[in-house]
Image (cartoon, rainbow, N blue to C red; front, side):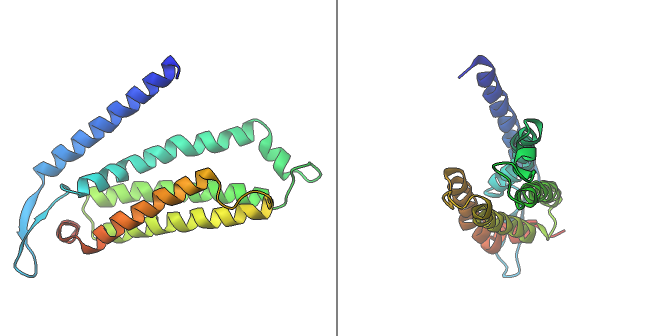
Length: 194
């Protein structure tokens, strides 16, 4: 690992630490105990497990902003896109252009949706839990659809490459852990009321 790579990770860790500290500090300051519809006292506010949700909500658009351009810009800069989409070349397939632009479009939509999700989270809007679930389920569905569609242009490749398996596992864990939390948590119901 080179010197610049070490500094890169130190900067990332510092930023993550600052974000965690800010979310925890802000959530503690805004936490309240309210009485729910059953007469039980319930904590509301962006504390507790919602702090971890908030961390994911804040880091998700940052991750997309870091990963998506670095994944797609080289394809256009090094001539790969032209090689894949020009009739007569060895790797040409008419679906490549649709596939690449479909991925770019979906990632752009998810980036904008992630920014909107952060707004919903910090403003404690009632739409937040549903929108969170839609993004989580939609992302997993897109990853699976993407894996199937790549078989159209690369029929000899395995349907689930290691990177795809990693993304399916990450999305699956988000759905298994956080979707039930969004649906069942009393704190979520007491917090997202605006």
